[in-house]
Image (cartoon, rainbow, N blue to C red):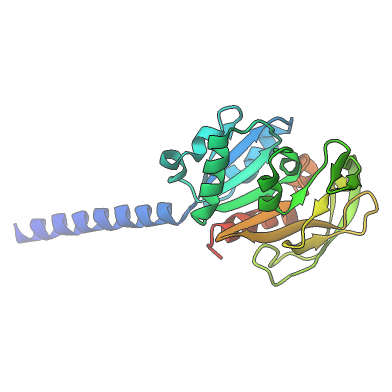
Length: 247
């Protein structure tokens, strides 16, 4: 009888231990909220980068329903917002929720065409550290040309700061991708990746802070040629963890 009780106790202890371990592992995963909408993309290979990342759980939401996820009752379930959208409409409520997300120290990773979102909301440019011009614009008396892009360019990327957590473990590499040019990058940005490709701006990946929040922008990421690049995948994974303050 004593032996049976002992065996039952061992089984219960083992069951509780496994449950606690599983719960701890779940808590350790970085919880990613992901926005798309406003720009076509290769959905399956793009989402695969997130599905294959064992360090995260993620929820993908498409505009026009995405901004509701920034409300406090929904936002509490996430650590990092990843933008792969190109959206212009944003209400005052959504602007406030977006800024509140960052004020709470939550992370932000902005990928590729999301640089061109919210053209008429100046705070967005301050948040991401750049402005891409969808039309010729006059800024404080200075005429800004429309920003340019070029599909299907094969070019070399140089790691500017190999010691930064976002680029740590990544060496200079080549990528086949779309380039952007003639957009502004602010002095608040810490350059991570550069290129000498004449069809591109020199600084294309950077890190910055917005208050207590960490922000990363990655110009790369047009289609499967970028998504399948292991160096690109590593930078993206690092960016998610760094903005979540996990590394």
